[in-house]
Image 1 (cartoon, rainbow, N blue to C red):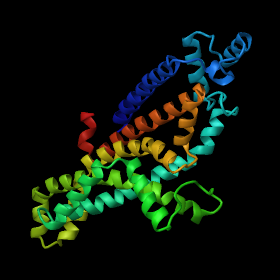
Image 2: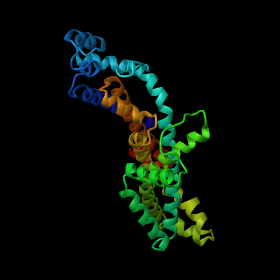
Image 3: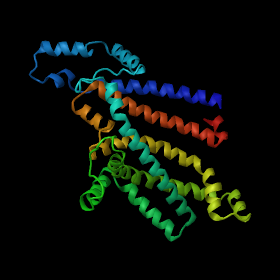
Image 4: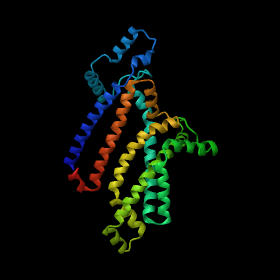
Length: 314
């Protein structure tokens, strides 16, 4: 296990280094002048030059990159040009919202997908199987932002059961939970539709193997065979999709937070892009990239824990 983790950790560090280069390069070759965006087109050239000097825009690109990386390793992403506060403070303030939304959506996704996938596999080629496949196909074809609007129209405007958007703060846990129900549902319903199809296919493949037939012949109930024997052996492809979907849920929260007007990282990155706030955009893009890379790393580790035979192949 040790050599395997060392190989994967080395690959993780190399990937993060490459990602940091791409993020820095992309942010610094975008058209436009941050100084002009902040001070306006009518600002005098002396003021523009002073601001460029303050922001370090006149320094060579390699020097700016090394300064940015060294500061990021210490938790210092610079000052936000549009908010006038440290970027790390902005991220710390908005991060809990995005984390809670992503984790709740991923938890709901896993529960729904496992229930639907196992149910469809247990009723293969029956009405239940066809029903789950039909609903999952609709979910796959439905954009999360459009589903969000439909949920708001139904549960907030028509039925008035839930708030249409906004966030009351963490001081009232019940009100905060109610505000996150619709965003969580919008993310989870779409993602669970994809995962349910993978669970069904993996379960059907595992059910055809000898150990499943032997367990049934030994007198075990169908439910026990499915949940205790077949599902654990069908987890490798499921874990693959779960890792990819978690990264997708985190990045998908960017759009959902703007639809529901939630004060998370997604809304912050939209505001920063609109204001040409280079330090904040760089930090947020790098943060989302780290989340995606870390999700893939954890998937590899989960592979090795589920099936030790895979350690020597990866």
